[in-house]
Image (cartoon, rainbow, N blue to C red; front, side, top):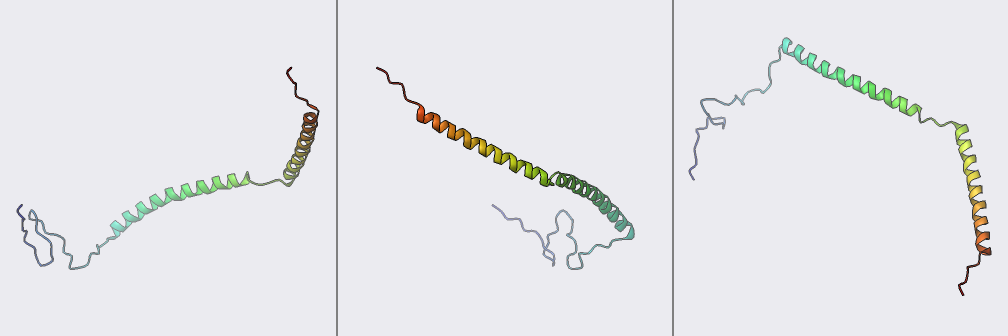
Length: 110
C-alpha cells in the first residue's frame, strides 16, 4: 500500500484541490454586522415566543390539575365514616361465618 504525501504549509493543513484551509493563526471571531445581528435576534425571538407560549400553556394546565387535587375536609370525614361502617360490617360477617362453620357437620357416607 502506498502512502500519499500531501504538501503541508506552515500551519499544518494540506492544500487539497487547490483549496486552502482557513487562516487559523488569527482570530476565529466573525464580524457581525447590525443586519446579521437583526436576523439573529428575529430568529431567537421567534423561537423564544413559541417556547414561552408552550410554557404558559403547560403552567395553566398544571394549575387546573392542581385545583382538582384540593381535598375537602367533609369528604375526608365522610370517607372515614364509610370505612368504619364497612369494617364493622366485615367484622359482623366474619363472626357469623365462624359461627356457621362451628355448627356445620360434615356428611358421612355409609
